[in-house]
Length: 60
Image (cartoon, helix red, strand yellow):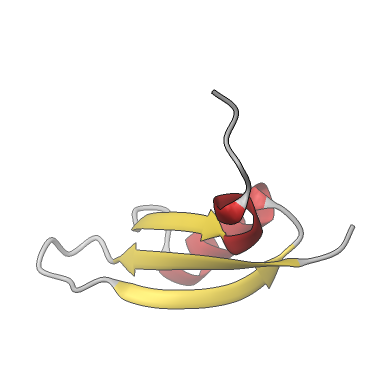
């Protein structure tokens, strides 16, 4: 399976933390989530998207 670029903004468990932007490669959404959880911990809060998926047309 080819890897795709994912982008995220990650907030540490500390409520005073500032979101940190990340760009990284993963095979799928599940792999991307796992990478973030390994790096920042299970309690980290993040937004996550893939540029290709975000640009794709939506079905109504």
